[in-house]
Every structure is written in structure tokens, then in C-alpha cells.
Length: 322
Image (cartoon, rainbow, N blue to C red):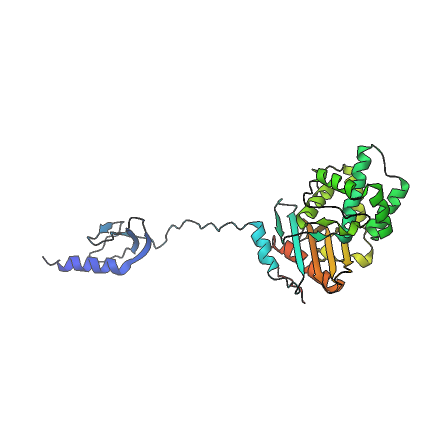
């Protein structure tokens, strides 16, 4: 039997008005229709099902507005965000870089890069932290000579002062013992008086920074304040590295730089606390294999900016140039 003219009018009008809005796992296609006033159409919600497969459900509504559930963006891990930010950093051929960062506001952290690096002079923070821990254990204050060495070692990166304190703490054995308590698992002191060849990772240096700047620390509050104060008073000519991230706020850092006699290439490192856009960060950047100190500094500063950018992705990236 052929459908009547009125039936055909109803079907044609409804088909013309529908829009597919979903398909179920069973194959049912859901569509939405606008109700029109006029012959053959209803002005209230109605549904029709055709005999075709898949089943089509049609509804007519007086409103074009559709209720749509908000879409939740997939969560991106901090390590992935840092990896994306580091993609904008140009690492010179043959060089390597590793970064670790902690957002002090959120507590989120991320790391990029693998392997161990020479500490160069950033180990001086570890040497002083070890000295302070040993003094705490002995329930004593630092001697005047120890304080004099500490000031020159951190603020001016004086190597003779570092060697003197290295010997006082017992060299690599004393450093390694303290680091076990600090939670550094991949750091090993250099042999003899070669404290600058202590091996470490960016993640371990971030752990060390947490001992200096965090409350959950083996160092007492006075010890932490003393070490932080020295790191906030670095000589003007050494105020580079992670401080390049700051927005003009106070920072605290220690840098390290060392030309390797065997290759002529440079180790350039920077660790510290910085503030950007009102938020605080602990940042550790390690690098090796640049042809000059200047190129190492450029690389370290670009990596530090990328580390902060990972937590503030709206900021424009800064890239190092070869």
C-alpha cells in the first residue's frame, strides 16, 4: 500500500529536519529534529522509528539548543610537558643536557635527559650541606675558618676553599655518607681532591635543592637559611644560568663550569631557586660537551627557561642557538 500524501509530507519534512548526534554500540543512530509549525508536524516532542537497519530514533523539539556534556582534556604528565618544551632548545652537536624542575606551588616535578654528569662547582653546595649536617650531628657551630671558606666557596666559587672543606668533611666518603641521608641515589664523590669530577644526575641535584629550600630536610632551619643566604649572594659575574628565568624577583643559585683537559669540551651546570610570574621553582640543569663556556651558558639558560615553560605553557619559548 502506498503511503497517503499526508504521511509522505510528514516523513519528508522530518527527514529534512534531522541531524545525526550519535550512534550507540548496538548501531542505533540518534538524531535531533526541529519542530516546525504547519501541516503534518507536531509541536511537542515525538519519536519515530523506521524499519531500516540501523534503527533511527527521531525527536522533535521546540528548541534548537542541545545539551552537550563538557569534554575533559586528557591529562598530560609533567615529564611529557617538559619534553615538549625541550624540543625548542637547540642542543649543539655532540653536547648533552639534562634538566629537573619542581613547581613549589603545585608540588609537581619533571625531569628530562639521562645519564650522569660532572658536577664541576655545583658540588660546592653539596660540600657545604655535608659540613652543616656533620656540625649538627656534633651539636656544634661552624668554626670561623669554616665560615670564611664557605663564603668564598659559594659566593666566589673559590676552589682552594672548596678543597679545604672537602678535606674537612672526609672527601668522597664523607660526601657520599651525607648524600645517602639526603636521598641522593646516583651521586658519587670524585676521587682524591677531584671534587669537581663528582658524578651526579639532574634528579639528584633537584633532591639536594629540596634539602636546602624545603621544610622536609635533614638540615636544620638555621643551616638551610645559612646556605640559602650564601646562594643569594653570588658574585655579579657568576649571576647566570637558572637566574635567566626570573621575573626580577630574588633568586638563589650555584653555577659550575669546567673545561675537560682530555677533550677540550666544557661542563656547564646551574642549580637553584627562581621565581617566574609569581611562582617559585627549583631548577637543576646539567650539560656537557659544548665547545666553549659561552655556548654552555646559552644552552643551560635555554633549558632552564624550557623547564619553567613546561609549567607555564602560554609563555613563548626561548631557544638556544648553536
